[in-house]
Length: 295
Length: 250
Image 1 (cartoon, rainbow over the protein chains, first blue to last red):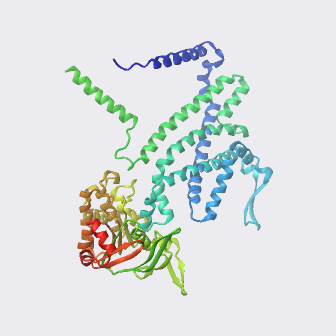
Image 2: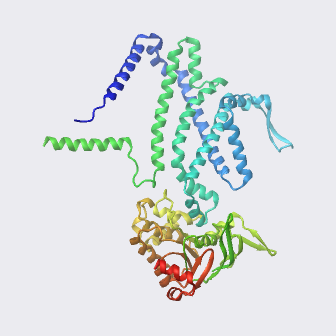
Image 3: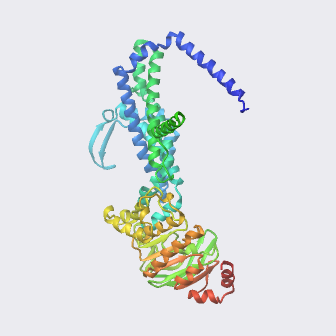
C-alpha cells in the first residue's frame, strides 16, 4: 500500500472552495469591470504611463547600481575618510523614508532657488533656476536612484565579502593593484551573490516608482488614477495597473534567470539548463519511451 | 636574491617571527621545513609584502621589501610601487587560488594582460607554451573547477611564470593534494629549478628538499633552528629539535 496523504485532500478541498468563491465573485460582481479592462490596457495614457514607469525603473536602478558599486568599494577602502563618507551616505539615505526624499528633491528650490557652476566660495560661471533644472521626473529619478544606491552598496559589499581572501592575495601577488583586483577578480565572482538580490531590488523599484505619482509624475499608477478621476471606474483602472506591474515583473524574473546563469560560469562543473533545454530534454526522453513501447 | 636580517613579525601580542636571518643567492633553491605554526609561511608572505614586517631588514634583489631608505630613514612605499615589485615575484599557494570565473588560459594570461597591459593575442602564445611546459596544453579552455588539485596547482605555477618573475615563492604547494598527484607538481618544480629559477619553497616534502634544494632551513617557534646543505642536515642534524622533527616526518 502506498503512503496515504489525508491532509493533502483536506488542503485541496479548502483551496478549491476558496477558488470557487473567487470565481463566483468575479462572475457575479459587475464592479470588477472585466468588460472594460481589455479596452483600457492598451489606451494611450496607460501605455505612456508604462513607458515612464519602465524609464524611471531603468534610470533609478542604473544610478543605484553604479553608485552601489562605488560606495561598496569606498566602504572597504583602507582610507578611513573614504570609508567614513560611504558609511555616512548609507546612514542617511537608508535612514530616511524614500517618500520624504522624493519630496525633498521635488522641493529643492525652496532650499536652493538657484544652482550654479563655479569655484566654491568664489566666482560663479553659470547659474540656473532650480525649478527649470529639476523637473518632477528628474526629482523622481534622483530620489529613487540615490536611495537605491544605499541599498545596492550593502548588497555589493556582501558580494565582495563573499569572495575568498585568497583570491585577492593571488591577484595581488601577480602585481595587480587594489582597483584592478576588485574589477578583474573580486567583482566578477561577487556577481553570483549580487545578482539575485539585485533582481529583487529591481522588481521592488518597479513598484516603488508608483510613489512618484505623489509629485505629479504621470507614470503607470498616476495615469490610471487620472483616468479613474475622470471615469469613476476605480477598480477596473487599478486592475489594469496590477496587470501591467505583474506582466513586467514576470519578464524581469525570466531575465534574472539568464543573468544568473551567465555569472555561474566556472562556479559549477556544468551550467544549469534553461527551461527550453529542459523541455527539449524531456521531449527527447518521452519520444524514446513512446518509440520503445510501440515496438 | 633574498636577504633577511633579524626579521620580526607579530600578530597582535603573538610574536610569529623572532629574528629570521637567511640569504638566498640567485639561481639557488632554498627549502624551508618545520612544524606548523613555526612561522615559515608567514616569512614567505613577508617576502612579497603580503605581510608587513615589524623589525629587521628584508630585501629582494637589493631593494627593501615594502620600504625605501631615504636620508637614513625608512619610508613606506606607495601601493603602486609595492604592486610593481610583487609583479617580479611569483607566488604559488597551498590552495592554488586560481580565478574560478576564468578559463585556464585566461588565468595564465591574466597577469601580463592586467598588470603589464599587453594585448591578449601577444600573450596567448607564451601562455600556451607555459601550459605545454606544465603538461596541461589540452586543458586551456577548461575552468579551474573542472580540474584535479594537481592540475590546478600546475596551472597556478604557469600563471605565476607568465609574469616572468626573477624569484618564485612556493607556500606548501603540495600539502592540499592527494598523494598520487604530488609527483606531477614536484616534477614541474624540479624542472624549474634545473632551468636556474631562484626558488624559496616552504614544504613538507623532505625528499624534494634533499634532491632539489641547495639549502635547507629548519624553522621552529619563529626562529631558524638549523640550516645548511640539505643532505647534511637531513642525514646528521646537529640540533635535537631538528632530529625530532625529521624523525616524525620521515
